[in-house]
Image (cartoon, rainbow, N blue to C red; front, side):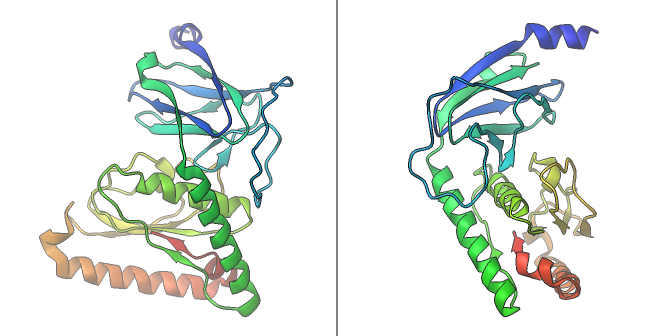
Length: 249
C-alpha cells in the first residue's frame, strides 16, 4: 500500500547512548512506529545504579513501558512521546514525515523519577505489611510541563512491580495526549492502570463539570471532587491491594 511504501521511505535508525532519549512529535495524520533493534555488540552498560526494576540487558522504554527487542510498537497519532534507554540502544523509527520532529536529548530527571518510583514501591510494601492505605501522589505544574508524562511513567513502573494504581484527573481541560490517561474535555475522573499495554482509558469513572476552567464554577468543582473522592474510597475499600497501590493525580 501507499502507506507502507511511505513508511519504508521514512525509516531511520537512531543510536542512543546511555541515559539518552529519543523525542518524537507525531503528526495527527502520521502512522509512526518504533522498534528496539537487537544489538549483540553493544558495549555500553548502566553506570552503577541501584536497581529495583527487573530490566533486560538491552533496554528502552516509553514512559516506563518496556520495548521488546525486535517487536514493532505503533505510536498514537498526535502524541508527543520519548523513548528512553538506561543502557544505550539502536531504534528504528518508521513513518515520521520529517526528521525535524525527531531528535535525541539527555534526560537528567529520569534518575530522580526512578528514585521516586522506588520510594513509592517501598511505601506500598509497608502498607501491605501494616494494612494501611498506600501512597498518594499529587503532581502539579504549568501547562505542558510534563505532568501527565510523569504520572504515566510512575503508573507504569507501579504496574511492572505488580500493583494496580489509580490515576485521578482533576484538570477538566482534557488537553493531554496520553491515550491511557485521556479524559473528555469538561470532565474530571479516575481510572485504574493494570497494564502497561493499555491503549485507552480503562473503565473510567467520570463526572461532567461542563467547563474547561475550574474557576467558572468552583463550588460545583469542589462538590464533584468530593463525590469522586468518596467513590474512590469505596472502590479502594473493596480491594485492599488496590488501596495499597495508591493514587497518582
